[in-house]
Image (cartoon, rainbow, N blue to C red):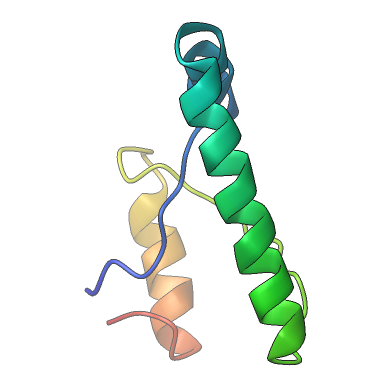
Length: 72
């Protein structure tokens, strides 16, 4: 399975803001640039559902994704 997305937990991001405020400002600018580039390409802003790989029901979710051609 190709790792197609990067996920950052909001609590971790909040902690990083406190420890590295200038670095986080750079991250915010990067997010803004990505958003504008997607708009330029005519793409909409996406919303994602994230499931931790260690959840007990993960195999059921993977089966559903496979059935719909969204896995592998």
